[in-house]
Image (cartoon, rainbow, N blue to C red):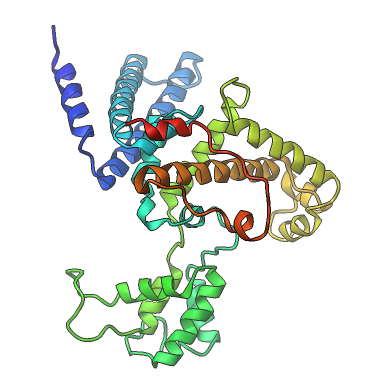
Length: 348
């Protein structure tokens, strides 16, 4: 006998086929909210069973089962959504990448805005040269002599002064000046979000708001962290690819760390952490701690995966391979890890 829940699940599966990018992003975000809540409730349940906590155990069990059921339904819906895109199918063919992560990639990455994988790395916060200035942007503007009336000044700046300021701030953030200019102009709009009839103006307020904003997507950055964790868990599986890349990178960085290759980085970090921490014990002698090495290795594997995802998505949407990376094309570097499972791109 078909229950109301079964009918709802079927209806959601049909809706999943028509999800927009924004809607998919909403579903992915809520999946992780539910997962986190279920995990916290599960820990509480274990505490009750060990007599550490005193809570109504039957209700906790019911909550856990309900959350598990919702997770399963959302996962199935996202699997349906991810399968509507060829690059989604490719992503799900990779060990360690399930329908939730695949849907997250589809929801956050528009391949039409990413001519190279570098755009994805920047958007995901994986470019170490990109900084988040935050409120420090105001002090920088004042020091540079471009903020005499304060960061909230709505007085239009001289064009040359504005260009000079934007170029200066963009170099500190690590992004192209054109991008910062575009963001600053976006703030010169009325409440309805439409451009005013008069010519857009650059003010200290608009430039400050653009320069102080986070230069990457926090949700995508978190998703990439989850991808790295997943690869670390699957590295011993025979079908795994990127977990083994992660481990090989970790082995290499361990050797480099022991040889003192990261001494300069470590000593600089030692000035920013508490002297009573385990991290300081390593940094202070010119070595990166194990957690730091692990994070570096994960980022390396994730960036390789994203370069392959970009290749697959570009090929699926544009019918041709993306331009080769600069180092391969212009610097004569011969080594490039081949993209796995590309045969899927030819299958709809």
